[in-house]
Length: 149
Image (cartoon, rainbow, N blue to C red; front, side, top):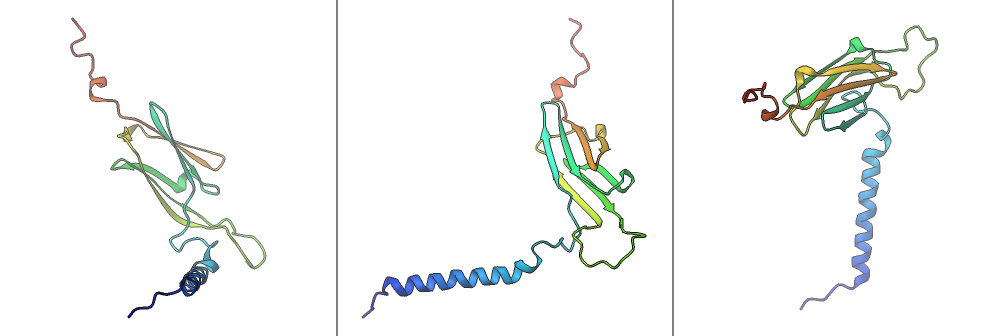
């Protein structure tokens, strides 16, 4: 003969399970939530699309143009670079910092084919601007063949 469980013990067990899950999540993730990842830092990006091109904006404060390489590989924009230490020559011992440095790589897949060889990149006020023209359809690329009718 089986006895049905009353709703109260089941409710208590679910509550206990939720509390244990929250406690472990806080224990595992809580202390390191605001620290940079072990792989370095990842600059924030924004991707915009027009009918003619994609525009990728990358936040790179403290990075010089010489420290960044941008290219297209398999319909993915790759932004690779390094932010060097800017604390050289500053007096005093470091107590706490949220500033990160080191290498970074961002891979940004694009939804359509681009003309990677026509990539244009520029820097202004800590922002990298990357312009990628979309590849025109095959029929649009014809060089006037058949236009002499």
